[in-house]
Length: 260
Image (cartoon, rainbow, N blue to C red):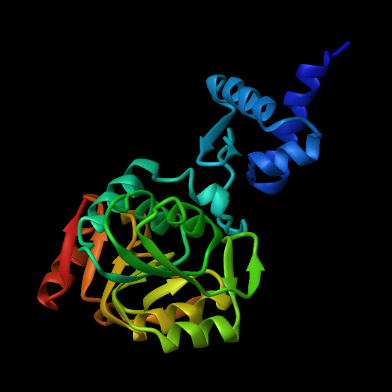
């Protein structure tokens, strides 16, 4: 007979497989146990190499070679990919921030890494529109927060609406940190979801300095929804894996390249 703990561990794995990842809160509600119990269980599963933990949740470690190219994007799975690169990018991007800056921070796991690295005692004004960035930003007492809400999209933790876009357009920022799922020299900067496009465009248009943050795996990729040309950005922050042709192109265009 399977004991309750083993049964619970199997149920956790099934949820993670089915949803391509889940938060601790979701697992706690699904299995009707405490957050602490879920954390302990996930720790055991991580030790066995079955899951990868991220801030606030976990994803299942696929053990086969099946392609996941057709899988729907999910922030919980994105947070488990290129973790060290995103952490370095977050630090490097945060180093560009000056006291008193007005910032727009886009949705995404890389922009969440920036929010985690914000200087604690520095006065800033931040406009954001995603739950994960919002949670990080609210930890800082010196930050004045503007939140553009609307319809919630669970796969990206993004809020989006015409009213939110209008709010962004009525504000101005020194710097916008914008994420991307694909960066192509020929076809520009793209994201996976069409609902992201207009919000990203508004963020770019409302900012004096436009900063693209993307780990090197995004270069050479093309995703369905185009929202900017490479030349629309003043700064690109990425990791040392960026293809040389992209690094050369940015330098030739006068775009500042920051390698984290």
